[in-house]
Amino acid sequence: MSTYQAPAKINLSLRVQNKVREDGYHNVDILMAPIDLYDTLDFHNSRTTTIKCDTPGVPTDESNLVFKAVREFEKVYGRKAKQRITLTKRIPHGAGLGGGSSDAAFTLLAINEILGTNYELEELSTMAAALGSDVPYFLTPTICRCKGRGEIVTPVPELARWSSPIVLLKPAFGVSTPTAYKGLTCSKRIKGISYGPQKVDDITLVNDLERPVFAKFPILARMKHWLLEQPGTRAALMSGSGSTMFALTETPEQAAEIAVRAKAELDPTLFTHCGTVNPRSQA
Ligand code: C5P
Image 1 (cartoon, rainbow, N blue to C red):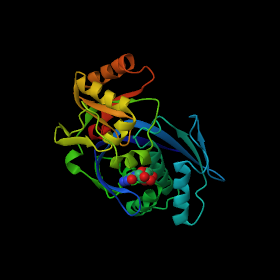
Image 2: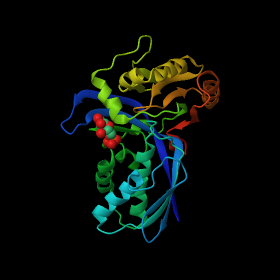
Image 3: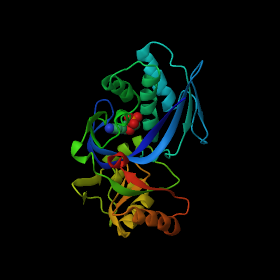
Image 4: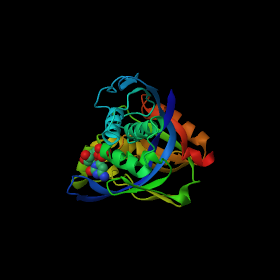
């Protein structure tokens, strides 16, 4: 058996050009960072490919992005990959944390290793881009700048050793990424909510998808406002197209205290995670 840990990401910055491209996507400029929240994937050689997942609501058929990754790999390989895959989900779905994309990228990396096919990063990246705009990022999940529709990934060496405590808050509902992008043309800002750039060390945090997503889900705007008022918060932002809101804090203790207070003061059903941005910088 081979086991892989697929990390979640946050968007430290997400800038979107309003103009829609001919292929229906938007050009973006994203600063992506891994966090220490992981799905686990176990791979066994088998007679056919199957997926098992204990989390209710996660499809285990061909519609799962992990299955699609296997099929994409097989198209290039020209043969069947034949893996029994067990997926243990910890990254919530519809959260803007890239869980499905990370699982798909790690499936490509795993099969490449298990079958000894030794495809180069560039070839894996082409397969990954066919699966989703965020998937190529997870082939090298360090702090990276992602351009084009997100698939043009460049590591940022100046930030290789940067790290921060973080707290994530995610309400029970998720946000659909296409809906978030569609809202860019027509949504308005909510009065009293700050959308502007925030500075932490040498990083500028801003997310252009906050405007359309907050217009549809004002509770997320209130969560951002609340996070910004908490002791120890250095910056607060939505990750990707939401619904996860996060705060970078000065200490891990402050992150933990915010998570406890959020459940008491905002919503007892919130998913929370306290951890580290760019955890391997400390390895
Ligand atoms: O590539 P992915 O499947 O993650 O994209 C989901 C949807 O999000 C796209 O179909 C598109 O509507 C929107 N999107 C976009 N511009 C991007 C990435 C995603 O408009 N750069």
